[in-house]
Amino acid sequence: MSSQFGKVAVLLGGTSAEREISLMSGGAVLAALQAAGVDAHAFDPAETDLHILKEQGYDRAFIVLHGRGGEDGTVQGALELMGIPYTGSGVMASAIAMDKWRTKLVWMASGLPTPRFAILDASSDWEAVAADLGLPIFVKPVHEGSSMGATKVTEASQLKGAWELAAKFDSLVLAEEFVTGQELTAPFLGERALPLVRIVAPGGNYDYQNKYFTDDTQYFCPSGLPEALEKDIQAAIVRSAKVLGCRGWGRADLILRDDGSFTLLEINTAPGMTNHSLVPMSARVAGLSFEALCLEILAGARLG
Image 1 (tube, rainbow, N blue to C red):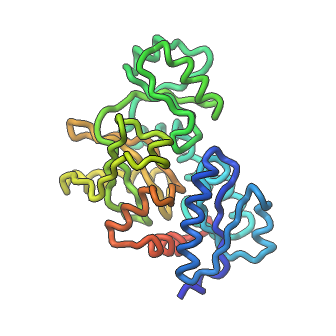
Image 2 (cartoon, helix red, strand yellow):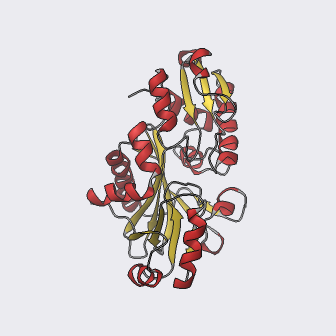
Image 3 (cartoon, rainbow, N blue to C red):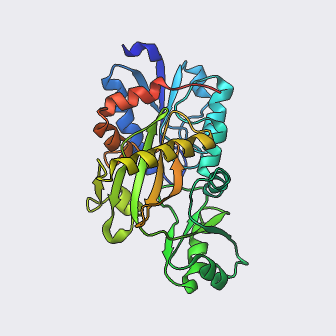
């Protein structure tokens, strides 16, 4: 059944700050594809030049690279030039979705809700930023994922240090109003939204450690939200992906406020696929095993 895919490269590892997570995700995807009879092989662009894919006769690529160099359109562009179909979003959508600032600009222009924000630099008036956005504030690099370099700031005097930390990861740094409410994540597969996952992290802090390396974070899927509200959010997620040009699969993160309104935080075009990851968890509730999920994503691989 799986010979239809030909020789498949599972792109994992890479050079971004999220290399460790990508290796975990890629290993899980590779094992699932091989178990399904796919001729799949691990390929780490940090260790082997990408152009070798063509020489080695790969027919398609399953991208499980997280962060820069994997999720930002660069690998997608290289695969386009080589004519090797790949999973997930194309060049433009990958590049925009990786850029939290420009994602917000597109969403705002499309009438989709997203928290208020400011771009920070060395000359920023920290007191004015705090007064405008209110406290607490999230400070984060524009082009990193997995909460890398992000800080929750509770007083204006902490903003400069938070900016300095984020600036180690990226020249563009975003300050975003802290929206209180329930943290949700919304995977999508093709044109459909999968069940929402509600996240309850220790101390309300869903950071790198609590995402990947603790068992104290609680995940609820089904989310327990009223069905009508879940459907409204899912429709907004599909639209939020569509206006960015996303395709194939991905995951949007959002906050459900206490008043029942919601606001979009960001979108991931190559989300985690580890045993802690949320797309596989949601897919299971939708009746898709991890293996079936990987095969469906792979079947959607294309160019252009």
